[in-house]
Image (cartoon, rainbow, N blue to C red; front, side, top):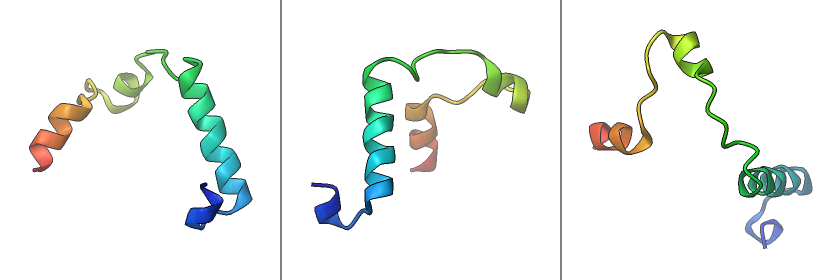
Amino acid sequence: MLTGFGLDAGLVGFVVGLDTDIRDGLLGETTGDLACLTGKPPTPLAAGLARAS
């Protein structure tokens, strides 16, 4: 389906792999790294979107 929308095989593989990792919880770990890098807590997605609108 993704190739039907014009994505090349490499990008399809990346998107499918990322989706699989999310499904398997691989990207669900909260480490605090972003706060350490930026020096402030991350903004939740809903709050960021509310501010942007």
